[in-house]
Length: 358
Image (cartoon, rainbow, N blue to C red; front, side, top):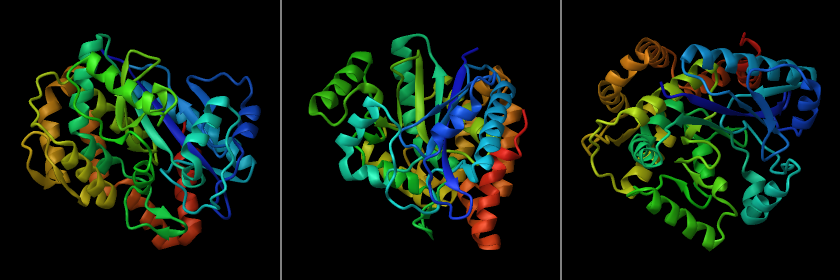
């Protein structure tokens, strides 16, 4: 059974103002040598932390690790009068983020220049183990076609500068400004992938292949294909749903996708970022435009044999049913803010870590 791993990014926000605060070093110091299943690390900004699971084979194992890591973050964030917020971008910002100390991050900031001042974004990254290198490229191509739907399901950043941004995923719009962002081209094989990455490196848009901002790419560290389209998720259950869908798509070798042009895919990512599951997007099976929920039903039918083989069918059906009933993260954030203002939104974001139990 192919293993998968999950990387979740969190923004540390002041519990009163919801402004990002540079506390990642303080929290890591407090965690110290506490035994963990998985890891907690700093990220690009001093207001960010990242939780990484160990490779897992089942949704239960992934959920257990994520809940334990989230609980730990929530506990230490509260002690510092902060919220470890599982959201794709902050409710508001002072546009003056501090970088985590690192020569790599210094180089990224030099290349991004003024963009860094507004680049407060949190993603969910899913690694799917594919041991054969050429098959890994084919798995990337399969995931590529489903990127708009995967974003629509996971959109969780509806606010910008203290206002409703009018987008379900404002993070996606911020990411769009980066070089090599959103949908990659379709690759013929591994040589084609490496040649295209080499060209971007030669242009100087990125300093190393690990800085690629494509929404799906090959990992430079692990034998995995890495999907990076999703916003950080409100709950561990939301994150696991995204991971299970990515794994099933990557392993569904019998898929026959329509030849999607990158302009249509990128336009579909835009509409998914704008309207979440209310969007109309390109169906990668037919090449036609359809409602996101109809595309989701087509995906389920396509990957159901793999879900059954992996033992993930019930978990995915249950999670999608819950998402239909409760709404995406963006919808839940909007409801919390509409009903309870900033306090209501703060409590929703806090619940994503503090109510989690290992």
